[in-house]
Image 1 (cartoon, rainbow, N blue to C red):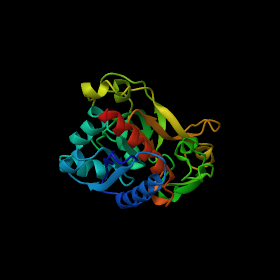
Image 2: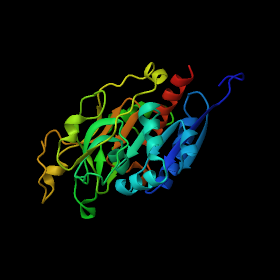
Image 3: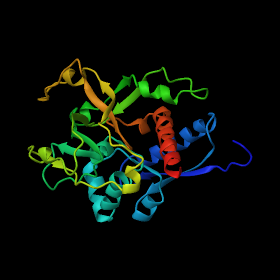
Image 4: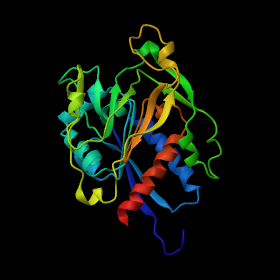
Length: 282
């Protein structure tokens, strides 16, 4: 960085209402150290736990951790944080990453859910299948090939070719990619035991810089569901289950990178945050 340049401040929050928020903070700090060794502009990183609207408003990006999506949603409602979260993700379109329960909350539609039993934030045009792999006994680990990690390679990161050992705990999957529509996903509202997120209009100044393209599949898990017993879910064993997606500012994973000690996905995501922050200040 040149002598006349100043470090850019970037604040990343982790929603700390319930779940594995502390583990995310630790991996974010580790990821920031790795980024500091790479040949990019210097950043002054702040990582903070978010429990109220003021803390959320101070953030440039947010992680919604794994935990119990229903509990997180309920606490957010009681804390008057649910609407600010929807504004953060869907109006201001700031970078947001949801893991496991966070993916459920960021979906525009979620099934296996009683009406009124779960509020969604939305932001990803997908339907998620809650607890897709069964209950706690069906929690498992799997090696994943994540091509997007090669984007986070560089001189300071020489392990991008290694598989990512992912942890799935009562994990959801993306059951269906939905069309990008203006307003709510009305077709999904007609599906039994399915809830949908309310619509929000993107801020006009933000819409000039962000294009809401279709959902991008970032990772799949081949053949896992087909091998499970006692499941009534019909799947294509060749296609596999969709376990990571991205759409504009929103990223979601079915699994728990924060529980692995492997910072590679956090490094990659922080690089996406850097790009978004740089675009906003231009």
